[in-house]
Amino acid sequence: MPRLIWKHSVNDSFYERIGAQDITSHVNFSALSHWGAKSDLRETGFTSQGYFLISLGFREHLIKSLEGESDIVKAAQKAATISNTLLMDMGNKYKVIRARMLSL
Image 1: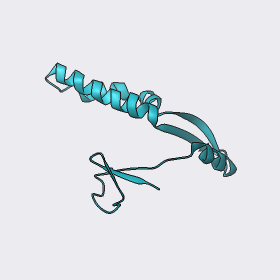
Image 2: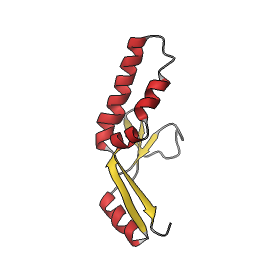
Image 3: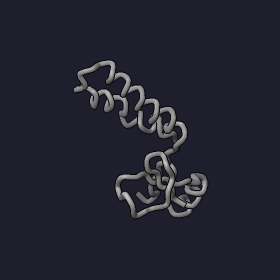
Image 4: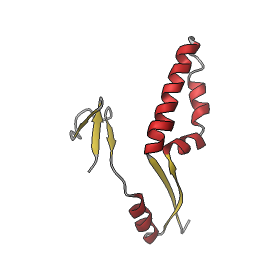
């Protein structure tokens, strides 16, 4: 069952704060891979969110997004907080699976 998160609180109000709250769910990646294979899907990658974001150029994007910051200390603190959250905390906890159709 999906969970909704609003300001660090869990709720089940799908139709409140649409677009403003996060939705998450537990995923059984083993079952997803198994049943995907039975439907002509081939798993082509499985990794942590952190490695996935790094492979997409996350660090370069973060640096570019902070270029206009006039306070270099504030920019460094912001970069460290964002990197720690997305690459370490959430990056190790959450996983990413990639698959492709065998017929393509």
